[in-house]
Length: 127
Image 1 (cartoon, rainbow, N blue to C red):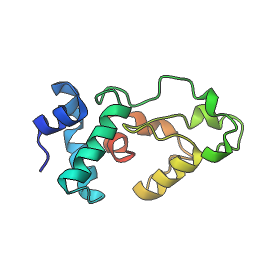
Image 2: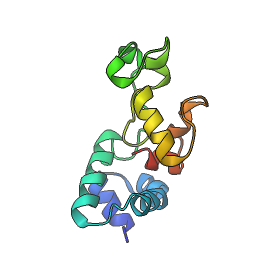
Image 3: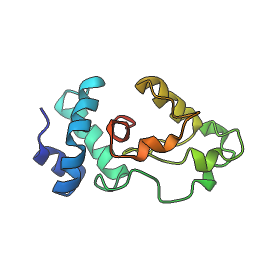
Image 4: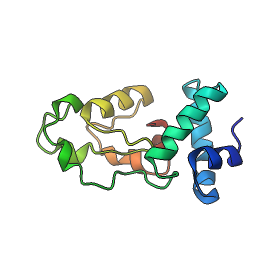
């Protein structure tokens, strides 16, 4: 079982942010069978990097740079901003939001994709 100290160290997070996300990250690891020390360390290091130590759940840029990026599935006007990086791992693009929607059973395409940035299982599981 992942401890608060391990999460804090692996993500370079402060204790408050680590405590906020610990139950959700544990749930995510269990759901997606992230169980070996190597898998867990790789996952947590990437999450820590992308989120700035579990601080950011939304990309700082507007997302306009992703407008029209067909490689991300951004084919409709406004997709760049609507589907900018969110969640602890900064899921980006309509195609990736669709994949996360399917994996989590939550519609991030037709409903507000902004759920992924909230402190909830969605922020952790969209990693």
